[in-house]
Amino acid sequence: MKWMLLVLGFAGVTVFAQGTGEATQIKGFRVPLYDDGGNLTSQIFGEYANMMPDGMVEITDLLMEFYDDKDVGEEKREARMRVTSPKCFFHRERQMAASESSVRIAGDNMVVTGTGFLWNNEDQKLVIMTNSKVILKNITRTMNQGVAE
Image (cartoon, rainbow, N blue to C red; front, top):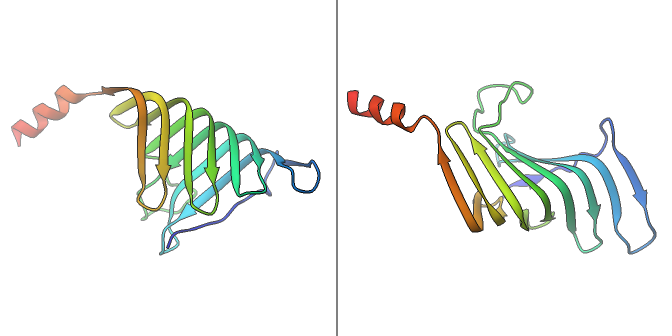
């Protein structure tokens, strides 16, 4: 089972408690996610988050980064893919995120945009709900290299 550690103690974090049973607002946060071997697989960042009592987190200005190079230290690891969206909801316990807002996924050789998404950390699956558009970069060069080999 994958586990999650919520890190709130770094520069720029401000917590405003609005009373018992109400949301707590956090400015500048990150949630690192690890595999069973303790390797960092992804991180969720947000400009703001409203922590709801039911375990949901409303995130403003979402950035998700995904990593796969486990042979280098976390401080040197580069994201292989980034997901951005102006707003989404993240369920801390289930490690799932969903949004009805615009979404942009950027990798080395592709960009995918659309409206709305569902993400599940358990199976590392991200689904764009509607209006998806895929742009492949350097596809001719990649195809020609494959033919030459």
